[in-house]
Length: 331
Image 1 (cartoon, helix red, strand yellow):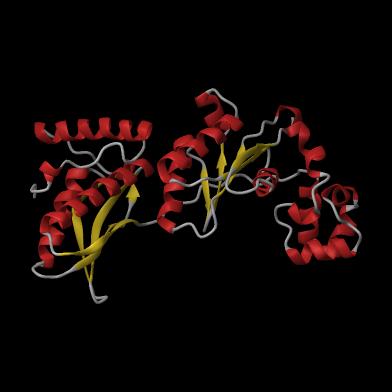
Image 2 (tube, rainbow, N blue to C red):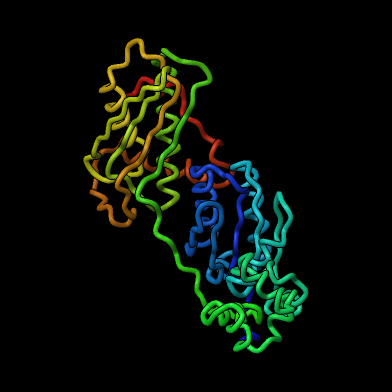
């Protein structure tokens, strides 16, 4: 059974201090490779690639390289990607990559030889206090930890922690990658370089946020049942209002219609705006949305164009298509 295992678990480390919205975009890039993604906030994630390897017809190392290219080209973010047959091996591998990024894959047959020379604190799951306790006992590397009888490790680290450390030093980690439920909201923001009174500029920024949010929701396989618009003004004051959508949606036109009604409700006249945020609220899985049969040819044409746009963005990046200025007056 062990000989048939493949390196199919990917552990991804993002740069420390990554903004939450960018971290969520990294998770979306992972979801394009495999549907089995476990977020590890604030800056890491696990991916199970078994099905993806068959679907894409390449090995896990290649998918790790594809991920790096996409996060760098689309988000300007480099990542460290560790790959192995178990979570512990993959996460330990990603920790051995020097910043800013890279890919390190450990095949099942290499696990023991690769883990052995590493310092004991490098083993994923071993904290500083545990590492110091093991060093005090004379265990300085993972190979020695694997050679110590499990009962002895339990006496040094405690029952459960000792069992886990002894198993993981041997490359044994039965934990599966557990998909984490996507967040219940998603938001996108824009900050104006100068205080703006220009209504056309505000509408242009709002339309860009609508398209970005809608594309993000479709990529996640989600739909919003409400929208919240937040306006930030010079002096630090804010205005915020939430509006329920008639039907849950992730389509540009539906979100745009509600977003324009929200900004009309703000009654902007001479307010100097410094920023704007649009948030999709009360998200649900897209497959829970009942698609009504429509005889509206204009809407059907928009949906077809939307699908084409999504494919173009998936291939060339999220900035490949931007809203046309001729749409700014649509309400």
